[in-house]
Amino acid sequence: MPGFGLQAPWFEAVLAVLAVWRVAHLLARERGPWDLVSRLHAALAGRALGELLACPHCLALWLAIVPAVWLAPGWGEGLLLWLAVAGGASALELALTRGDPP
Image (cartoon, rainbow, N blue to C red; front, side):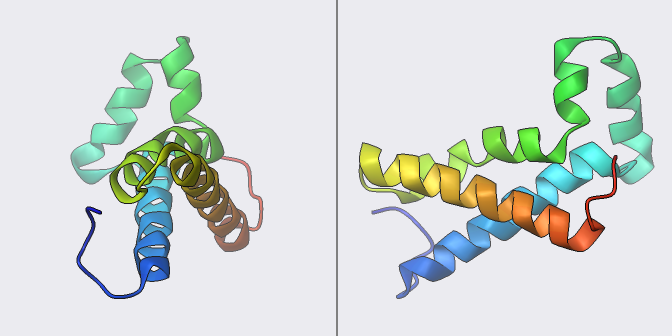
């Protein structure tokens, strides 16, 4: 199984949740370094991808596919890990922003 070579598989899942939350939060709620994310939002305004970039929960759902495919040994575990990582990232977003709209 690929991964970080750590003993505890739950630790990899926690790292995946934190990484997915960080990237989703950056893309949805921050301006980014040198305003790159702001420029990306402006370039995609009015398009479906622009709408996706405005929602950290939607982004978390799509971004969580990467660690789920990378860390899970099979389809069943991958599906569960995908939803767990996306849910964890969304819960973290809600907890840290208190549900404030973007």
